[in-house]
Length: 177
Image 1 (cartoon, rainbow, N blue to C red):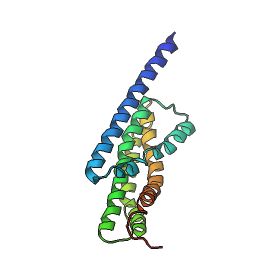
Image 2 (image 1 turned 120 degrees about the vertical axis):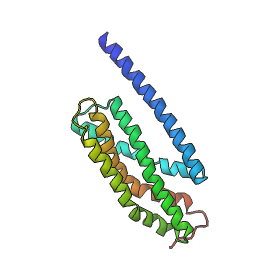
Image 3 (image 1 turned 90 degrees about the horizontal axis):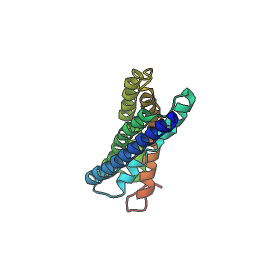
Image 4 (image 1 turned 180 degrees about the vertical axis):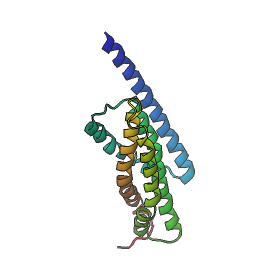
């Protein structure tokens, strides 16, 4: 019966964290709608959130670390950083478009120019998380933050501008063909 009680608590914790994550996603969506005055742009920005799982899940498997509640908290915290990186990409694309740059050039420029701030943010997260990586309680949190940031940095840098391009290429924004 001991395992039954522990599994019940684990289920409740993950359920509650899932509800909290859904609330965070809704709040992020509302805030980004307010900032960009668009209902579609937040979806482009938030599309990068699952990319962190591409780093988190294999990292847990490779290190033999269980995906715990602290791992889930790391994923949720990392989602905020991923969204911030996506926002600076999209904001830069829109800045370049307002300056008269073609859409295809703007998305390429955003991926190139905004990589440094994204890299510095990911580096700071990785270095900061390394200090708690060997703590048995917070190891999942640290691993989720580190692996999630590496994966999302590499993938969102390319994917967010491409998704933005695909979503906006049918509008009357000039491109070079």
